[in-house]
Image (cartoon, rainbow, N blue to C red; front, side, top):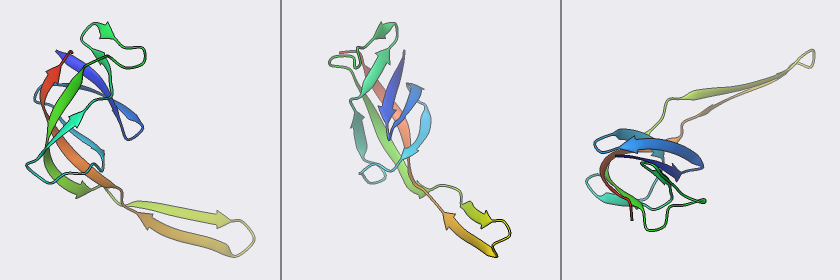
Length: 100
């Protein structure tokens, strides 16, 4: 069985045992997180959410994403700016999907 969940403003298609990388969620490694914004479970589609459905995931690690370079340049103005950014992420392993 699979489900479509929403977290961090993004949607993910998940199944039991999947490992996904999402934007930072509260919780320590080894703990569990309940994701209750379930948009779809199997063939059941929510409007917009499926009532009573939830996805339970185990927090594998709290990590940081790759470094991105933000470079802005204004031509003919001798103006340029360089910044770096690393997003905090949470790595989750899906353990249970409940249809509700």
